[in-house]
Image 1 (cartoon, rainbow, N blue to C red):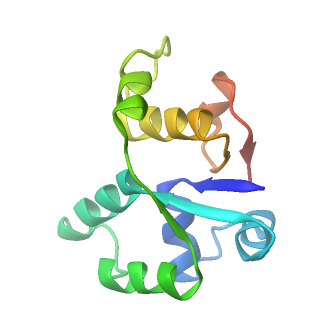
Image 2 (cartoon, helix red, strand yellow; image 1 turned 90 degrees about the vertical axis):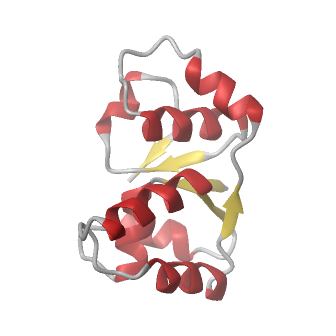
Length: 125
């Protein structure tokens, strides 16, 4: 299965937080799955780190991703266009972009955020 991790999922996984569900953790650790993190999530986590809202240094997060063969998903023009043109009242640009990436790249989205249930996406938690 191809998985795209929401920002909180990758952060909770890398920091060892018990806020990550057991199911989500098992999906991430399953070597049969392709696990990806969007550049948008790294950007969001970096901003939160600069504001003191997260404690895991971003370089440690990226090192954990490399050690565990978690891939990077770049943001393409197609992703940006799809996200910008969504008929979805939800205005969070991070969520809109992650949704677009999950749809266009055929990924299940690993997220605790039930807002994604308003739109058609395979959300796992």
